[in-house]
Image (cartoon, rainbow, N blue to C red; front, side, top):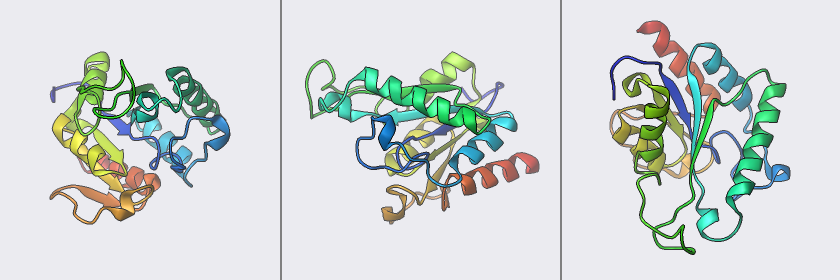
Length: 190
């Protein structure tokens, strides 16, 4: 699906929006990366849907439950509301192919680097994936964006600084604020 429709900015969560302290699921552990709320506001104000796509293997591993993920996302919503913005939708993968317990230990189409979450969001919101971006801090994020037909942007926050080899045509920036600058500049140019 790359035709007409609204564009989105798909955001990885941990390491892109917030500091990745390792399996963040408690609101008290949540800490924005500097500039993230303002970047989300600017992109949303420019007309992009803001959609979080996050692997949450901590569920499969039994570290926390799906209710904890929902509560953290409600906390994120409240924090973003204080900054005059919001996330339009959340998609998460609770699975892991090798670790954890049933029903979560399994192969799936939603775990990044597979594009299942992005494709589901595209179907749910009639998105133009070719006019959309994915911003993340891991190669699995980038690969999911490429597989879905989005423009991927690797940020050097989270695990991004550790990525040595970046696929051709993948954009790389310091953080979500710089990604917003790049996306908004590209929108003006097109």
